Picture 1 (cartoon, rainbow, N blue to C red):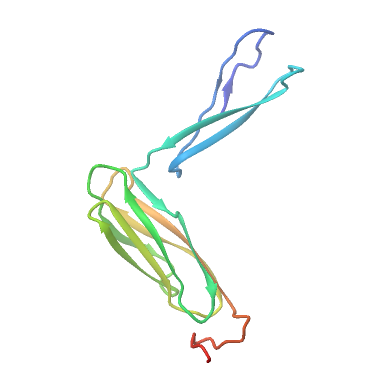
Picture 2: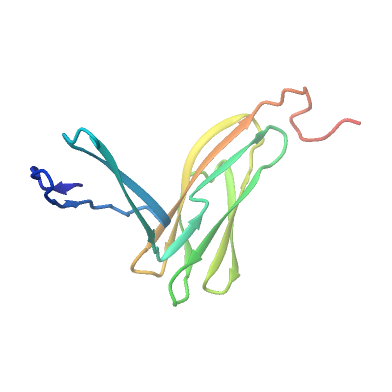
Amino acid sequence: MPEFDRAIPPGGEGKIRLTVRTRGYQGNIQKSARVYSNDPVNSAIRLSVKGYVKAPIIVSPRRVRLYGKEGRPITRTAEVRSELDKPLILTPGHFNLAEKLTYSIEEIEKGKRFKVHFTTTHSSPQSSRGFLKLNTNYPEKPEITLWIKVRIQKRADGQQKTGSTQQ
């Protein structure tokens, strides 16, 4: 939301205040705003704001995509990492794709790094979207959501759907 002085005399100074809402962001961010004026030389300039949003928990990637061809399971992994100096505990929350995927949580570094592995359970053509919510012991971030998209396409090569290969 910009706040600014509406009128600035020629050769004068004014203030422009930009507010960047960082909810939902993590890591490096860059935002910009275009400022218009009646100055014949610089009728528009761009202001940029760069920063680093330190989140208590980093999720990478934030959106898990399981794309592939029918006939074999697809597996993808997301990493969950604590950025605070206290142990992180993850517990399963709501998962709305249980009929299409399985998931497991692997602790890589005790209380610090986790990997969440997703695997498709059906290998027939489908498209689905959903999420996995994980509960944490951090009051700063009591819940994290991993967004999931599944797209299994029909095989174009005429192979059997069972995943067996013909030799």
